[in-house]
Length: 255
Image (cartoon, one colour):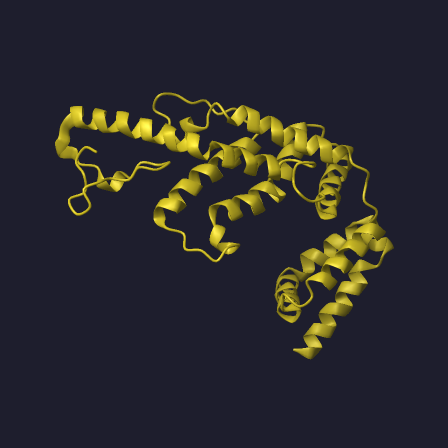
């Protein structure tokens, strides 16, 4: 390629352009030629990865094509958000959509996509990190309810998947609709599910450490949490403030 690396004789271009190796001495003509070659390589790489990106998005945003049943916790959480919207008379569907996106896809999946080393025992190189950032950004744009206006001066990573994002957005909307249509999960079923998950993974985590972290958080915001429990009718009915105070006193005494 133009102005190859003196040591290896080549330059590597992936989903993002490596700006650290740009040579201003080539002039406008050289820069234009590099950009044209870069764009060709960029599109070729995108085409190679397209099926894998599509499969990932379809698996995440599907209640059927996922290889396993949808976890009850997702249905229970999304129903809770809908109930809160109804309770507060929030009728704007974009608000509900944003709540659901913020609590699952953008909080969990983006982190996993951007940091595969959290799940797999692998080394993430800088090039891999840059490429996964493009996929993660596409994932975030697909969950957004706003329209992204792109022009010739927009970043290449935004332009790369611009034509795919409307389709991905429709998958996200369909995912939320399909979950809303599923039968509701009762509190008893959710409790049984959590108990079963605790049993299955009981030996994989340090429960005392987790409880300690929860205690530090609750103790820090104790007054705000207790006040909120007092104001909520469901919490008053089940005496959750009293139960939490007992837990706090127990932890304070043992520490």
